[in-house]
Image (cartoon, rainbow, N blue to C red; front, side):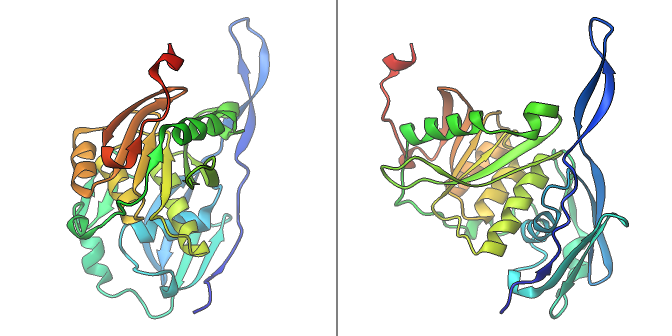
Amino acid sequence: MPRPEITQARRPLTFEVEAINERSEALKSPIAGEAPLTLYIDKREIVTLMTLGQHPEALAIGYLRNQRLIDSIDQLASVQVDWETESVAVTTRGGVADLDEKTARRTVTTGCGQGTVFGDLMEEIDSIRLRNDIVLDETALLALLEDLRRSETVYKSAGAVHGCALYEAKPGEPPRQIYFVEDVGRHNAVDAIAGQMWLDGIDGADKIFYTTGRLTSEMVIKAAQMRVPFLISRSGLTQMGHAIAERTGITMVGRAAGHRYLLFTGRHRFRKTVSPTLFA
């Protein structure tokens, strides 16, 4: 089955506006872009997402994937973004079965820039199985955090965005960044990566997912749906996020920045390799 036909309709990520600083000086300041993007499936309106517009096609595909509205990239014939109409038109090869039923139930979440999830939030969680034969060692974790620190980002220049990254870590090798996506909402960023993984045929079973945002229940569920065993955040987590991480067996690391981190769940996949005295 061929890949869907997709546009490449990326928007400018930052814009310059005038601001007055603490010395009453007028300065040009970069700010993050934001625009509505209404998603249609076979001409039916589904949702409007507020997005930076970095990878809108992947965002649409990942949204459909993580909301469980489609089961495979093979179902999609085309994904067409038009910023003049602020819309993305998704055409399927044979329609979406039970679309009314799938979109009937919504769960309000803590997500910024999204806020609802179709269907039962906990659906399929108990059927997810993550690999237990792979290990993330501490040296690789710290190298990943340093790589992210050095990265040039919209956040550094303009703020106001979240970032997500997907890494591959092979034993004895530094982590390799596969994707890095920023958006105005952390859920948009994770959805864009999920969509790009489908487009590129990348399996999450041996990957590391990083997010700048907090680890809520929905963020943990999305990582589990992508079959990613390692979930890392520079922020904290919620009680339900912790409970679902334990339930799915995800190795979850929070408050990760510099040489500091907190390992919350999935300790069987993590290996200590750095002496605590080196952090003193």
